[in-house]
Image 1 (spheres, rainbow, N blue to C red):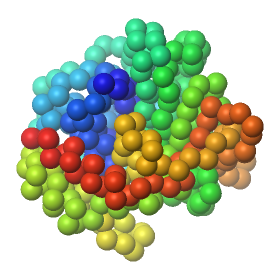
Image 2: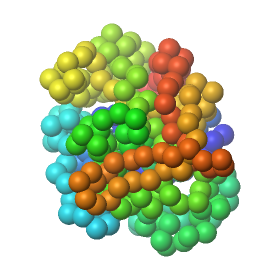
Image 3: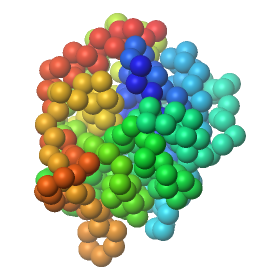
Image 4: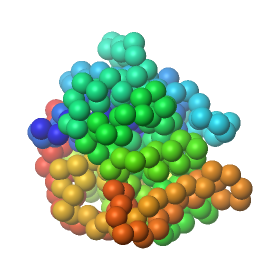
Amino acid sequence: MKKIILDTDPGIDDALAICYALNHPQIDVLALTTIYGNVATELATQNALRLCELNQRPVPVAQGALTPLKIDSNPVADFVHGLNGFGEIELPTPSLQPVTTTAAETIVELLNKFPNKVTLVAVGPLTNLAIALELDPTIVNKVDSVVVMGGAFHCDGNVTQYAEANIWNDPHAAQQVLTADWPLTVHGLDVTYRITFDANYLEQLASQAPAVGGFLMDAAKFYSQFYKEHHNFDGCCPHDQLAISFLCNPEWYTLEHGTLDVITDGEAPGKTSIKATGHSNKAIATDVNSEALLTDYAAVLSQAI
Ligand code: RIB
Ligand code: CA
């Protein structure tokens, strides 16, 4: 089993990724840790708990930072994910409660409890990971690896010409996380735009798993409307899923190795870059086997309720 901590801002593509992770037979989700981005952090926490209840998988949920390290908070992405983060599809108020430790404390605690056994997956702004690094710098040697959805290396951003949303929301945290001396793979827009979940595919998920797939199909309608209006294509991009599919099937991905950097100030805050170097424990994904990913995602989701 692959032990993971999933740091997330649910969010519709976060929901797609969380439901897959919670139902994957080889993934052991030790905790969901929450962050602002698609919604405010408090709502991200409630949404993570809602998804645990929907999937009948009561994993610990730890609430994270409410604001970025240095910049003022950007507005939440309600025009992409709806006011409730789930495209205005309501799930019941959760009866589960978050744990009392913060996201960063939970990350530090679990990496120390299971040294070199835990993959840290981050699919929202990277504030919690940066705080965890500050709380305990030794975690760089205790994590198995770090997998991030964020950035736009060889393509345009999705918030500004240069910046992808997760990096743009806290460029200082991203700079710390992408340059820390730990093994890290980043899935930016270069690769995430290569996968589309269209209406037929989402209907298939719903028919296989009426409760979980049905919810995801309904929530994704709002998200797909955004892609129709802003990108003129049918369906939606499951950005965050690219990081999760990588965990058990890295062979589907093309990687480019090098050192990474993030611009924090000036004219292009949030711009990410890679420089080829002889030896690097960092990589970005540039391509993926989309057929394999789509087939596998549906197979895992068919095991959901
Ligand atoms: O740019 C895509 C990323 O921003 C995804 O993680 C999505 O959930 C939003 O947070
Ligand atoms: Ca996300």
